[in-house]
Image 1 (cartoon, one colour):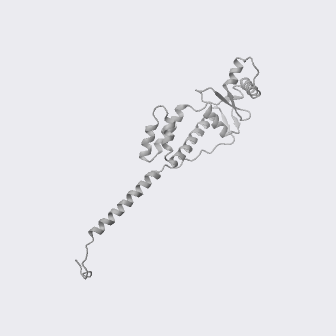
Image 2 (spheres, rainbow, N blue to C red):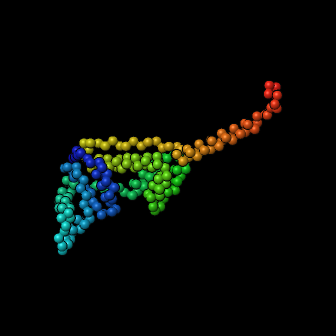
Image 3 (tube, rainbow, N blue to C red):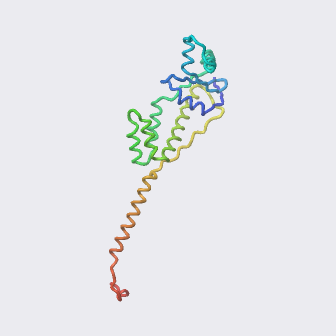
Length: 213
């Protein structure tokens, strides 16, 4: 059965980013009747498994009610939002790096992503290149929305408001820093050639300007 829903793409994207299957602090679900994204904390689930010997605050009571509603309606009314996996985010960085035309920057990005702290090192390198940094944000968003679209399709969910995937600009072959260095080198070259030309120009003694050498 295909469910036609109006999707809140921003809320769904946030759920994908925060409800990782590896970290169960927050679980998010999509309501197949309303299209609403419902997020539940781990504390609410723990309460249902073993009620504490004290009264819950009002906001927690509301969350527990939502949790009970999800438990009763799962999986016919509610479907679990899987969230992004770490290896998918890492693959996005690899795919983006292959699109970088600046040789020096591309090499630095390849050096940044292996091992622990890859995401931080990757962003630190891009921070020095504003244009490529913005291109990465667009590229990352596109990858995320592609995964969300594939997941919706796998769950037989048809959005009534399909999203237009953001267009990723072409990479700049020479970034601003390299461009400025190139201009500086060209300036020195022009100065050098000008001085070289003046040296080769023969000096004519006074009174002999009209006599060819």
